[in-house]
Each structure stands twice: as structure tokens, then as C-alpha cells.
Image 1 (cartoon, one colour):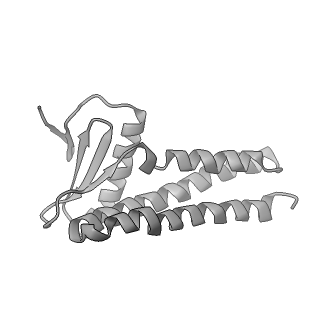
Image 2: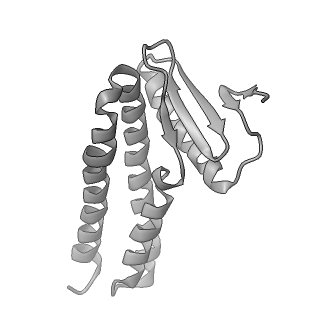
Amino acid sequence: MSYHLVYGVTFVNVEYDFLTSFSVILAKQANFILELLGFETNIEIHGDMVVSKILKYKYQHGVWIGEPCNGIKIFGVFSIFILCLGSRWIFKLLFIPVGIFILHLLNVIRVASLTYISAVNPNILDFNHNITFQIIVYSAMLLLWLFFIKKFTNS
């Protein structure tokens, strides 16, 4: 198995698809936040999974980012709901990218936080991944929907 290091990303399997590319972008953005906070980070790509790690810590497992965790499904659900609401198309077409941007920003913060948790205390990683951040992200999506309904529909 050969490894290639390009711009701080370790490639285990060099060929990957759009979803993996998007996961790499997400991991790079999350690691940028961690690097601003003084951590040394790394990204590895294993097939269709992207691993974001903080280096020089006791726990080196990192956070594995795949298709369910990169946010694309959330963007689709959010957009379809907005498109189904009774409102002017211009409002929908302007609000969808804003909402996706907000949800993506939350996901970047989520991945950065989970990467930190995996390096310092992986025992609480599953709880935060499956409960804490699910509540935060889905609540944010609900609040965006409610905001759109109140401001841009006839309800």
C-alpha cells in the first residue's frame, strides 16, 4: 500500500469521488479551526472515508468522515422542504444557499469538536456524535425552516 502526502493530506487511495472530495473539504475546514487554536492536524483518506486527526495526542484514532457525516443529505432535506413551502421562488432561491452555508458552518464546527474529543477523550465521542451534535444540527435546521415560514410564507 502506498501513501502520498500532498498539502497535508495523506492519500491511501488516490482515486475518489465527489462525496469523498466534499468530505476532504469539510475535514480541511475543521482542521483549519483546530490549527487556529494551536493544534497540529492531519487528514488521511482511506477509500471513501476521510480521517481528521489531531497529532501528538494520546489517542490517534481521529474522526472518520463518510457520506452520512459530510452534511450533503442534510442540505438536500433542508432544500426540499424550503422548495415545498408556499413562497415566492426568489425567496427560496436566495434562502437555500444561506441555509446550506449555516448548516455547513455548524458541521465544520461539529467535525472540529469531534476531532478534538477523539484526541482527548474518545470515550465520550459516540455520545457527542450520536446525541449532542445531532440535536444541535437538526435543531438548527428546524429553526431555519421556522424562520423561513414566519418571514417568507403567507402563514
